Length: 160
Image 1 (tube, rainbow, N blue to C red):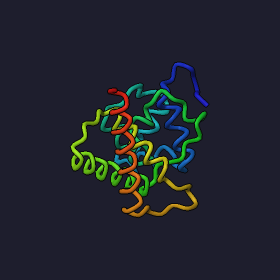
Image 2: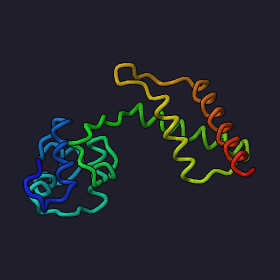
Image 3: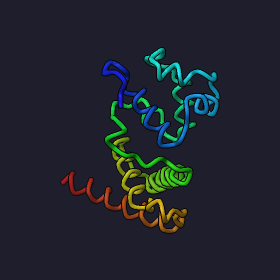
């Protein structure tokens, strides 16, 4: 899909996301709050590496993260499922509740372990697109408790 191999990967990702979400260059520029020709200029190679605020605005309009837009991965090979508002709500709830449980239990958890736990909980609780609804707080709390207990046990076993 790339017009030329020297073109930055993010431009290829931008094209893929625009097509998936039915944007043309002008409509995406306006949705992102940019000048009417900003996206067209990027697609034509006038912008090799945009400012972060521009990337953030485009990513928000496309409902992806700046890292997903700018990432080195070719989105064409992944067929990504776009992040929905429900996904962000679920992630926010998982992170908030996990932090609360860790503080309540006075656990020490590194950033990598915390991220792995959030990812694991998210994957367990995220329903398929057709069945999307917010999981119950009780279900989330129970899964967090199980995961924290498991992690504590794993660390104690590792220290013996």
